[in-house]
Length: 221
Ligand code: SAM
View (cartoon, rainbow, N blue to C red):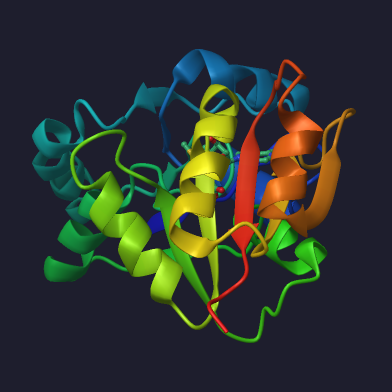
């Protein structure tokens, strides 16, 4: 059995009772960065063995993990924060498990885009999740595609590219399109604001932007 277990995106209380119990019960926890995960595991007094499973080794390590799971091991997959598989490693192992008849259970839990989308005040009955845009090649093609979507769309962005991203969104979506910047969700300096793209640039342009960011952009009317 493979358990896919969401972990907090900031506030350590954002983890379920079942997640903690399973992290204690499994034979092995696969973590993206074992040093990052150790802090969470120590906080909840979880001493299950940890092994690293990240974007750079997942192709190589997946067959061995499938073998372990086939010999009745219970394994949990976590990422540094949020839900594995959402802009994080997970997909390859989950697909390999399904192809090999291994049961996969994903617990519901923390992920950054859901609170950003809901708190944005932009329509969330239908939405499109883009995650990270490519930095260079293919970026413009994605921006054209996104700008024409009739539904709200969600981007993950790093703070030092926020202004560049807002500027490009103006280019493709127009300065009056609504955007929500959700920064440092669940953390001490959480800031969620929704405004037009042009006003959002004015809000952020003279500030040193820090922390993690989700951008939620209104669809094309
Ligand atoms: N697996 C995660 C999830 O379920 O949301 C996403 C991991 S991805 C590598 C990291 C990105 O998620 C960050 O660059 C940021 O865009 C977003 N993110 C993660 N934590 C956040 C937070 N506390 N506040 C705002 N955005 C966050």
